[in-house]
Amino acid sequence: MAGPSDRTFSAETEEIMEATYRALREHGYADLTIKRIASEYGKSTAAVHYYYDTKDDLLAAFLDYLLEQFVDSIHDVETTNPEERLALLLDELLVKPQENPDLSVAMLEMRSQAPYKETFSERFRENDEYIRYMLKAVINHGIDEDVFNDVDADHVTRSLLTIIDGARTRAVMLDDTAELETARRTASEYADAMLR
Image (cartoon, rainbow, N blue to C red):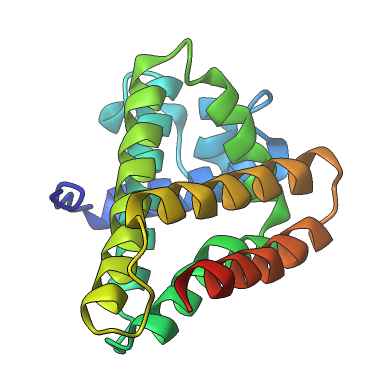
């Protein structure tokens, strides 16, 4: 699998993405408007519309931006040790979201729109495929290096993603980031049981 397409963002676009991030955290998906994003951006709605025709176009670009942020954070990991790399990936997926619970709520709201909005569906699918690819690559690397047991890497990857997705949903529904902490421990226990 190839990584996500190399999207580049101009300085103006980066500012709009950061404004969208702040507006989503404050207002959530349901109450998000171009006007609120423009207010966070510090410019008029026309300035936002210059780059994006609709709120959905802007939010699709925002999902691209978030995926690029995730990819960059993964590429910044310097270790090639499979055990350490898997732990860092799980931290990125289950510990880091604890820092921004409001964004997690907004993302779940957007995810709920994916069946009805193809642009959202495509982005979430791409994000899922990339995360699955990264987890599976780390597991396969560990198998090749005789660090991990020779397991069905696809099955282990999908099971880990089920833990991750379930915890993210529960954390939002119950307004309890402890669900993410529990899932992080569960993911480690599962990985240890399957891979070592």
